Image (cartoon, rainbow, N blue to C red):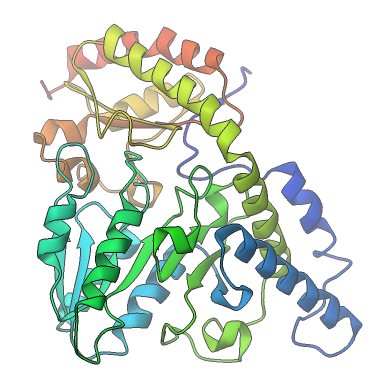
Length: 393
């Protein structure tokens, strides 16, 4: 059987063997409960705190500002509900193309009486700073905007938004000067962009291990010192009482190692992937008629290629490619069972068929130019066959 070509690294990544190596001892040998006073417990606790310190140093934070969670969705929910639960009402700003972990949390808060502004992102998939400024008001308690979009990879001007929020706070004269708080989902950005929280001006930041060649089911939420967060779960005092329950020590150790490798290697890997990305985009748009790139061509992650192939259903292309040994997607893995067109593509303001014909290829460490050449060898014929029988024209 021919080796499969995996082009869906935005959905999840394989476990880096260097990460697995540091995790191995904590499955069987150093298995203690970190809350225990004896040696096994102390070793586990030490591993957690060393991991916390390692992550904190890479984002220019304090160790106590890192809270370990079960992943991106939990971190997003802890940030959003953790802030909102301190209020009976208030105003929240987000965008129309956030991950559903943020969008659905905001929709729930609307049901509970909160006001939410959903910003447009324009045809290039980037928030307008003018629109953002106009959306701010004295009742705004939280801003939640992702660093890089999970479907089209466009990078948001987070540092600029952070500065606008800081200036807005300083202009207020009431006791509400600490708000709005600024939350950023950086799950897709963590492997490629600088996450220095001081430079970005963020109060809360989400990172997920499974997007950076780390273990699944683990992530962290950065919470700036002084920011008040209410827990979602209640139990023991683990993670400052914000995430009770016995800690997943192997996963935490693996997350820290994966994050270390991602940050140390991001410049070199980003340069390599940018070259492959641009080569792929050029061939797609040149060799297949009626193919359009979704999102800005430059301000996007180095590994992201999202196109709309008009006249076909994206799901059909994915299934045909799968038969030929290629893994890709139509969008977020969290919504792959939905038959609705991508909310991200529709937020760009294009026709309905752009959403139905969208395809996402996301490159990773294992990909080479030969992988792209293979896809371009088979994809034009697949599209031609599907267009001949498709009801979508």
